[in-house]
Image (cartoon, rainbow, N blue to C red):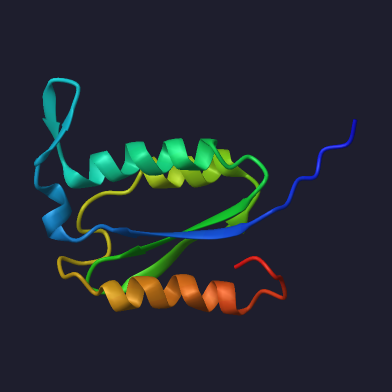
Length: 113
């Protein structure tokens, strides 16, 4: 039987500013940093989207492209797990992070963005 699989293009934009080091999330019975919680949830999300192209942008004081859109989810998850608080500066330039992600999506000639 034939299965209709539609691909999506998804850019994740992750905050790596200083505030992400705050340990105010609980996983199991221990407190974890906000970044650690995001890494766990985003990694699970990536695993749940096997047919989609996924990219990763990060932001702190500035926004940067960490991974272009790709079907290589292992590398995206690896890059996600390697993120550290402060690698893009201490501030929280959310507009830059979203802007980097949007710029990548804008360049696509695809229906799903």
